[in-house]
Length: 141
Image (tube, rainbow, N blue to C red):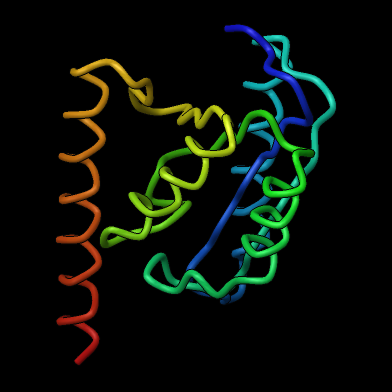
């Protein structure tokens, strides 16, 4: 993979904040950092949101990352999976923001390129994430 211009953003999100979750978010952070270093991405900036669901796009770290993107400071965003970024169509809106800013989005666990198979897989994964989120909400009620 090739480093783009600007900093590399590593974005982690964990929906629930309960005892032991610090280890989960730390694992995400370490896995993203390892991926970035292995693939030659430098100038790493980390963004982490705790206790925010994927449907909620009003998150402090996400808001800061988007501001940094709009300021031209970020060239690449790396996530574990696109559902860490957003769920239920929100990731599509964010993907557009990235595209308009020339920011490359990389998922470490899925194809995340702009080829026809990558676009198809992204849509399928978004539908699965939305289904999963709805199932969790139904179980909680």
